[in-house]
Image (cartoon, rainbow, N blue to C red; front, side):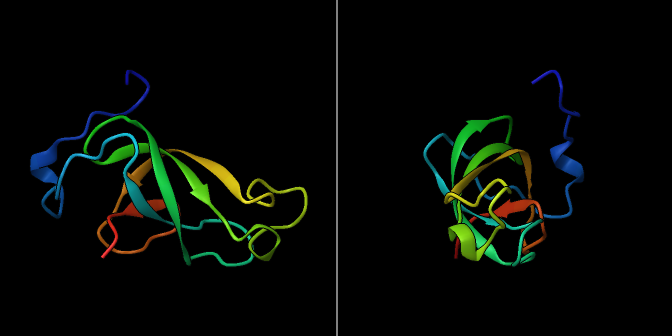
Length: 96
């Protein structure tokens, strides 16, 4: 956790809903590929804190990405992804 900036939870513009844990299913907003801004399901594989996690994102394979891009084969890693309450490319949120 040393490589990440420390988060002051009291200054976040929203309350932290809950602490993520390994195995949680969340929504990740795509930041690359054909459908930037659309959400895909993702599994938490490492927790850095209440707002920062590593994710394994489930994609729609070639419908989301070109052949040589991560995600083309149906999955990619989103490392040190930050939480946001609304869909924002490169961020995750709890599902509805």
